[in-house]
Amino acid sequence: METVDIINNIMDKYYFTEEIKDDEELKAILKKEIDKSSFNNAIYTLIEKKDLETVQNVILTGWLLNCFNPSNEEPLRRLLLLNFHNSHEDIVDLFQTMWNNSTKNIPILLKAIDNIPEYLEDDDFKYPYIRKIIYAIGAQPQPESLLALEQLAAETNDIKIKELALHQLEKRKE
Image (cartoon, rainbow, N blue to C red; front, top):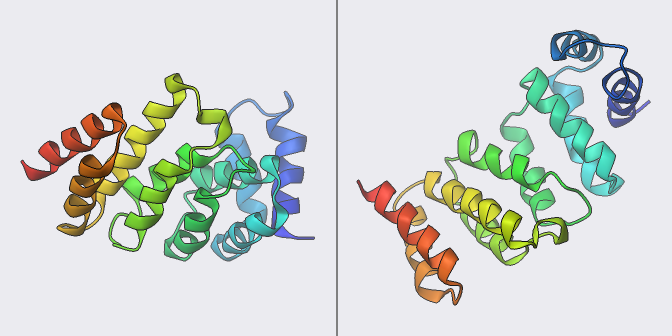
């Protein structure tokens, strides 16, 4: 049985039912079945599976078990730009907090601004998501991140994006 199937089965049996009382119980169950290596395998299969629930379950498992690691960065770069799932904000959070030491992330994050998933297109969701992306760009290595933010502010026709980029530039230059 593939790791993603194991994760989905655990989530279906325990997380989406009243069978467990808290995240600690779920963590204990997941830890019995999932280690870093099997988690990495699950991450790599997300793109080929193209299943919303599977992406949610694997991302949640990564957060619960603290399994995210550098080998997940490349597949999640690709996943960020795909629109069959709804875990974009979680992935952007990883690029801001964990994977913030590679200039390779900057063009991917910039593409994400131009590739807003349908479920985030409403302005009430779009701009908070774009803010997260801009913060993740700002967290990447300098001076490349600053140059990217300057270019974004100069080239966008969206006043709100320009304001967000300029605000992040000010914060990063302090």
